Each structure stands twice: as C-alpha cells, then as structure tokens.
Length: 184
Image 1 (tube, rainbow, N blue to C red):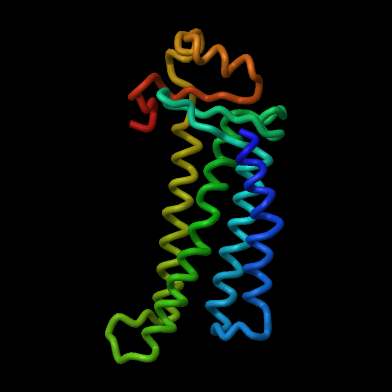
Image 2 (cartoon, one colour):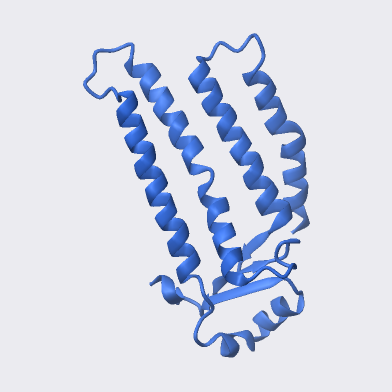
C-alpha cells in the first residue's frame, strides 16, 4: 500500500514534469499537434495518478469480485454508487488523450504519403464522437451494474473479508470467487 504512494510521488515530482519540460523546450522538434497530444496525455496521467494513488486508492479483493478503497474520498460520506461512477470516470479519462495522440500521429505520417487510409478532420471528429459515446456508455454501465452482491452479508462474514472490513474505508463486493455479480 505504501509503495504505491511513494512511486506516485516520485513520478509526479520527476517523470511527468521532465516529460512536459522536454515537450515544451525549444529543442523539441515535434509538430505542434503531436506535442499537444503528448502534453494532454501526460496531464491526464497526472490526474489519474492523483486520483488512484492519493484520493481513492482502490484495490481488487482477489479472489472475490470486488474493490476495497482506502483513500480520503472512500472514507468520506460519498455513496457507493457515486464512488463507482467516480472510479469509472477516472479510468476512462485517459482514453481520449491517447486516441487523439494516435490520430494525430496517423495523420502526420499519412499526409506524407498518397495512402487511401488518411483520416480527414471530419473523420477524426467522428471517431472522437464515437469514442466519447462508447466511454459514456462504459461509465454509465459501470456505475449502474457495480452494486453489492445479493449475498453481501454472507460474503462479508468470511474471515478474509472481515479483516478488510475492519480496516475501514469502503468495500464493494460484487460476488464471490468467480462470480462477477451484475456484470455477467
């Protein structure tokens, strides 16, 4: 648990700032759209790291289908359903930045060729609209289907689960070992 926090502090104070400094230095010869794509990706990774390493700190409850969360957000009065929407948003927030970067790199390479596979600006917008639509469905589905198992209280009495529950924080049990609960 503590190792994750120290790795996040190290990367937030060294790796991400160094990458951003390199991107915006005068010696960087990248094209402007790719440079901004990488910067957008780095900023979304910083946000992701802050959320998952400091604010929420979720951990899977193997072999059970569930999550244990120990961060300040999980110890607050936030409801479980809002927390699951928050986690789903935190997971999908990185995807658009990577998709934009990939499309910019593709366009940059294809504009030097006579390929039929070149994506026009309109097509890139259409791809991003589809991407946002699917990510929104993912977010809604994750928030809607991530509820405690019907036999939650029975599973919570298992010795390994009582130890987790005694630690405090938030725990969500979707199902027993091999049971995905409402996600099936």
